[in-house]
Image (cartoon, rainbow, N blue to C red; front, top):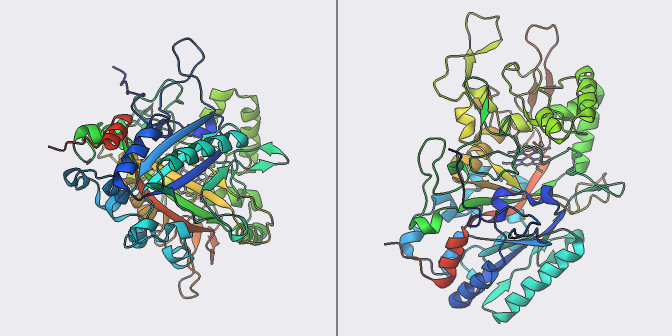
Length: 522
Ligand code: HEM
């Protein structure tokens, strides 16, 4: 039987990446609670406006698509300020309780990415509680003027509580200005909207499909989990929502009572600055030497071609890319989705098509980690071993992340790294440590699972400027060919962390319970 989720109980940003649903601009606002009772009342007032995951439509009885959406989440400190009972607080995960800054060593937030360089809004240290981020509110709008309308509404609600809840400033904007919010928006090219981020890659293609997602969700092929017979199925709901069975057939650890956690989840918010000048210079320098040319090299960094997101697994070189482009141009929406997402690394165990350090292979290795060297085979080639799991991608299936957010800022001068441009990425997962932190620590900043030693994710790794330990990555070639692998040497840090924290995204039921102060953990 198909799993049904209570979409009216789940916040809308869990199911929908709003950017793909006609909301090209968003504003993220962070608040501090000064008085607990006012904080709870404020939460109650906002909750009335919170956008759920329910399907929109124009038929009688259906909820119409809103002009702007509202969603809300809390840090651990925020839940404490709202006086969630201790018996419930102790049920939250250790990393959520600690917060992102405390986890900097796990996350590789070092050097220029270390917390002392983050935006002022993230400099609260739990000693001066008036500086801590407690509440996160995200406003997504169909037009810039509608975003201003939504922000005016939010400010009006804040004002009603006369200092009981305040908007925190300190989000860095253009020319170092400190703002009361973090704005994000899609990147425009020649006056037209794109799906690009600031390095020029098409983004926002892949997002996991899980059981119970409404009918608007895409096919699980390439987005769900790969089965032993080669078919694909939706992932277990409990990978992304608390109170539901996960891929280990267990309930993910969650605070009690069940009404507080069920249909809620955790969200990781990260502000990531993109060093566009360094990226362009490094790509140009190696693009001149790389046998496949600059654009193939750019594709090797991520695992997808920049222009249309064609995966290297389907289009590993110039001739196959030309064929891909022709099929892509002729395909309808569903056909394009298949071309972009429905692939495996089964015939690319050497990394000759998509290198082991390419961003998408690091983040989602699909079924390629359950393979071992077959001693009887041609030296260097790899083959699927007898798999210990029912699903060949079992290891990756426990590390999947729903991605939300949009780019921020404009690149005004591509010859400079400084400036206000990057992406705000929000990752939704049921277990921050098992999912986000594991991926960030073991797969982005370390390469052992990929038999790639210390090689990091090429675009995202915390590459070292230390002359003694320069970062490198190998671009593999077919082990049966005469070609030599290409070595990317002295990789500079392309992305820098500028702030963030861990949040709990409650269900609608839990929001109401928090607002009324009626959480009974007994
Ligand atoms: C500035 C930083 C980043 C840039 C420029 C970037 C860019 C991209 C691009 C171009 C893609 C391919 C398009 C797509 O599949 O949607 C992608 C995929 C993805 N990225 Fe990132 N990304 C960044 C940071 C991160 C971070 C911090 C994470 C999580 C730790 C992450 C997680 C993912 C995931 C889960 C996918 C989909 C992989 C798949 O299932 O194939 N990204 N990213």
